[in-house]
Image 1 (cartoon, one colour):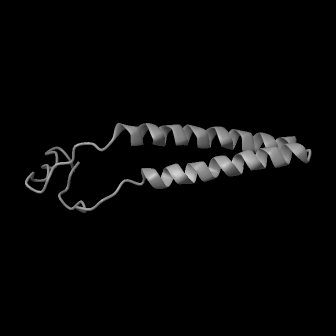
Image 2 (image 1 turned 180 degrees about the horizontal axis):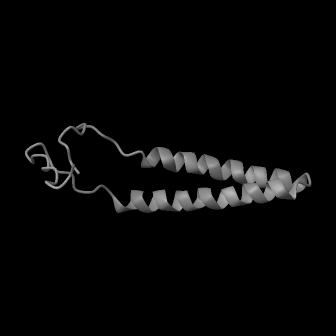
Image 3 (image 1 turned 90 degrees about the horizontal axis):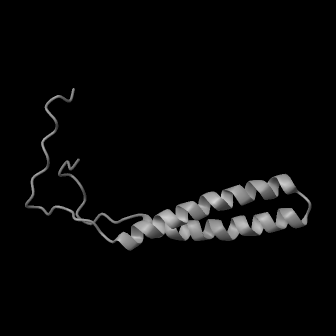
Length: 87
């Protein structure tokens, strides 16, 4: 719900999340390989599962970036009235 107090220069955090996810992919791949090579299968499995979570987030972020910006009402559109039944 629009309150009318949103900043006019607000920016999406998607690009930051993209680069953090790329950083996470690099570290989880390195961790999985390092733990597998040193004989720690439990930690390698944990890094592998974390790798899947990071890749899922990366795909989600890329999908939203590719969708582009969405319509945002301008200054001439007044804020929405709060619902009457809200307490």
